[in-house]
Length: 320
Ligand code: NDP
Ligand code: GDP
Image (cartoon, rainbow, N blue to C red):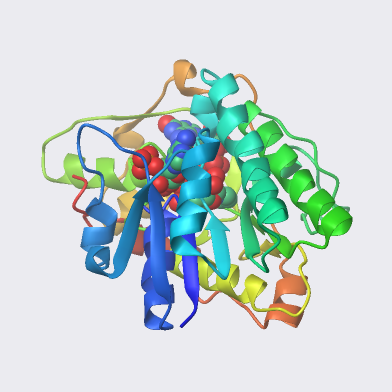
């Protein structure tokens, strides 16, 4: 039986990946951060909690990571844990660097020292591109990285250190350069769930207004359960490599707002206010992927596109 260790199993992707790997027959181990209040609601929502051996661990604590790898003895590690919110990285830049940057190195060092054939998936991100686009207005594996936030800079370190260890030590380590992916399990501070959550509350009379920042930013938004399959496919290849995972479409935050309010039969302009304080010191304004490599080599393609995603994202979750 194959064993997988998932860091960040309490997050959106961790929960969907656990569900996906359980259906593939994997023995599952997941790391979680001890906190005063249990944070397993996503695993409970997917009815997967009982199938996972949970190991307390923090990406900043090398000995707890070593313990997690020793207990799980994994064939595959999916390093999904991160300070994942770009906005927060501006007020916690050092923590973000430690978790998202050096945290990745800690796993690579453990694998190098143990000398075992452990495959590592690293959760890289389209935020690495910043304002960089190809001539056709899209971003692929060859597009230059121009990070725009402490989050992106930390993740860029993670991306490069994975490549360096792959080339220097022959470790099977791959980067998934995933564009934004959403679901009902997405954290409420991210813009898609912030919008759909507010639509529900305004519709039922609990709230009157929705304050947002930059409405012009555009994202290539996909559906998280489809993206975790791509993570698994990336580790099933004979050779480690890096892949863009995207829908190849781009839509602005305003389009998302329009679609979400329209789905509930409301006119967005009556409820949405722009709050300058919610604008970031530096933002990524245009993301649109080119998933040709994933399509060709992984045989992966997204099925859920923008309009369907907006509707799926409005399903209420246990977090509310
Ligand atoms: P979430 O924010 O939902 O989950 C992040 C996970 O990391 C949580 O389990 C969190 O634990 C854990 N975590 C945070 N800090 C630490 C730490 N110091 N030590 C150990 N665990 C920690 O993110 P997603 O599931 O959406 O994303 C998964 C990964 O993919 C992240 O690395 C993210 O940066 C990256 N990514 C995500 C994209 C997206 O659109 N979703 C796009 C591209 C990349 P806790 O629950 O305790 O907070
Ligand atoms: P990101 O792409 O990982 O930063 O995902 P987010 O969902 O946090 O943000 C997507 C885009 O929405 C960014 O360009 C934000 O600046 C923009 N945005 C506009 N208003 C808001 C808001 O109120 N909250 C968040 N999170 N993002 C907003």
